[in-house]
Length: 351
View (cartoon, rainbow, N blue to C red):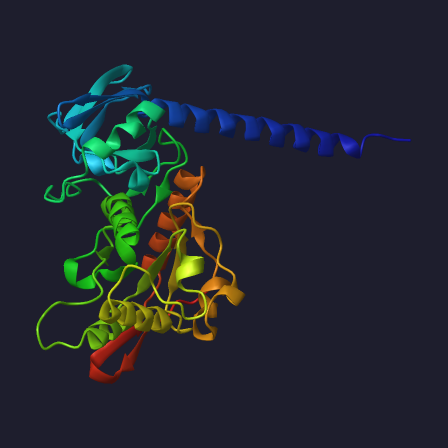
């Protein structure tokens, strides 16, 4: 059999392989030529009434990179003078000082976030030892700490400890164009979880105005109307579900630990948030398990049918990144509106 017809095919295939190899080499060379930031070892020590976190950051790439800002959740912003340029093949330490919450709210870990001048962000999960967890009840978190999330670049988020495989986020909009994100929660534990979640996502989601307050203490104002207005004006609603939910919302047993007015306002808001037109996401926190429809009242069963994001387990970091990516993609979509009485605005999410 004459093999001559196959010779051009073989030559073409070989040329294709060579071209693919050259492309891969060029791609690898391009990646290695830029900065490569790695968040490495850390030490967390207690000094009087403060915790000090020292975080080692290295640039293993071939070009310099600016460290524009750094923030460590409960500890606040970095006390090291920033911005600073980190040269290629060099490293430095970042220092954070602040207080940590009681162990029942810390979940045994927190995140350190570093903003880079190239529009990327690096994240490292800081895990606490048993000794550190046992000492957290001594120094509860301060409620008068300033908002230290400003100035952290919010353009990209990197998975794990480095900035490999960065994910693009929406550009920073003007204040009047930002979307409204509501953290719907109940009880003291839910409030602490909402504060923690807000501290994690607010530096990375500058496309949203994030709110946690549902009701109002203003005299003469109907808290139910305020709750309705906030729900219907929200573009995205994150419903925080903790471990107490299956019992406290089971068949109209009520929400333990809340007065009647606040409980009623929360339930009204929760029912409204389940309207098909609203983009509502259940968020499992503090060891919560997936809700079952038969555990809830008929008008709340829709919450159990919506796909949740689980931030209560060991895969917290990856699921948090998944949530951030979803919210960023949602912000980039056109946001059609439906007019409601009293100029209510209801956002519709096309899936």
